[in-house]
Length: 347
Image (cartoon, rainbow, N blue to C red):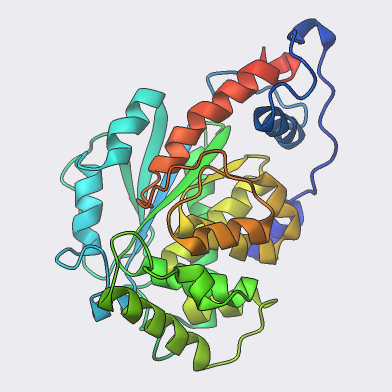
């Protein structure tokens, strides 16, 4: 049995939350915690009697890869390369780098598909890992982004990464983020394929934050061209990933599945993380119960993907960073929820 099949076999459907000992009950009215209370119930189901205390052991996995569609120059960073974005993040020149250390979040940036050779300049707030599956993807508007075999290898690589970074350090909470020029176009194409929603609902009148006019029109045209060049079975998750995905999207899907198999909740960041989770949920419907939406960003496709998975975002901040900042911000909220309503073993 290969790694993917074995991981899918280990994902258990969530059952009822483990009952909480009355000694630890707080004088809170019924439903007084609102969405926070529902989050507590989800966490208790996921942890299912494990000894999970606070502070939670939090890991942020930022997956990096290049996209062939990025050559069309419709990125919000037209003068940059994905490798430069990775270098900036590792050097601390990113919002997530300011937030994560303060919240005691261990972070790793993983190269799953950078087109250029890359080596970090020393170590900083985050660690670096190289698990390159391929040097980026092909132009999804002209043909499949990758072969089916490559798509499967990207999912497996994400599983391997999660298993590696939790070894000897039992992760209680995983956050996902991404770095990759053109990734939002890939996420929109995946959203269209899996949700069946029209492009106007996914990209909006202006497209992603920072895109307007000709740039937004170009994005819509590229996604439409990708969708029109072939018919895709929405039930074939690997087929959807191969046609429209990125290597980091496949890897994040794999990491999310591995987390679910190990009873670890997964905090999703932006639209790309949500697209990866939707692929994972298509491969294993039971995994959906382990996913928590940190926030809802400005790209309409993000909201469409969350609705498709039945996830209610914890925060509404209109963030459009993708690097994991939203997931990190929500980690503090998840930790607070567990402190308020966790099982006795967490007290």
